[in-house]
Amino acid sequence: MRFVRNSSFIAVTFLEKLSAAWTANQSLLCVGLDPDISKFPDSVKQQPDAIFAFCKAIVDATADLACSFKPQIAYFAALRAEDQLEALCRYIRETYPQIPVVLDAKRGDIGATAEQYAREAFERYGADAVTVNPYMGFDSVAPYLEWKDRGVIILCRTSNPGGSDLQFLTADGKPVYQHVARLVAEKWNTNGQCGLVVGATFPEELAQVRGIVGDMPLLVPGIGAQGGDIQATVKAGRTAAGSGMMINSSRAILYAKPAAGEDFAGAARRVALETRDAINQYR
Picture (cartoon, helix red, strand yellow):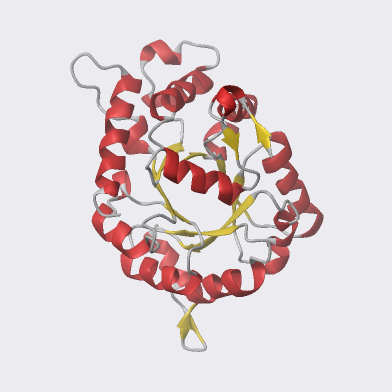
């Protein structure tokens, strides 16, 4: 156990840290960090570290409203801005150590390659959790499980329409996504560190997954710009305690239209507050 400034306790494992954030901020909202420079205000675009500056402002504006932050690695890597992602993750760890960072990488390899992806997520970026793809089976997940204090969030029923191409195929009378949920819950989650990605765009499947995995945390994309219904999502995915989810919103918060007198961070905070409160109505 360790302590940080202001004597705030920082939980040892990802799940402990997430559970503490659910309670402290009364929030199931995960703020996604998908920086698109073309959508930045001109004043930010001109800065040499524009991606870091934009994301830092969003983090500062929403840290008391979120249960987690989810930077999407591709938005940084495509612009050779991995150094800014490192700086951002370090900034969140040092300034808001009570809020877990979920690196959205969706890695899906095996063996030594997967070991290096795990090191990238947990050593280079210091993430509390990472998203991974289970298509290659347990071998593609096992290296991440060696980091017993970190979260491993496995794709299950994704929010995109094309996810049905494979995830809804049946095997032994059950759709593949349910097999994934059962495998993770019953065989892979030996350290209690796993979670699943289940889209808000499929509330019936979300409810099915919740029934299979019990109180396991779910990362739930698909509200906001993707159109998932908040009420249906919360009712389908909440645990008996009214938590259990990181409901992600990215573009709707990041690029909210400022009202009179607001800057982009103020607009992001307003939408994040509205979203958190809307989620809490149905917990």
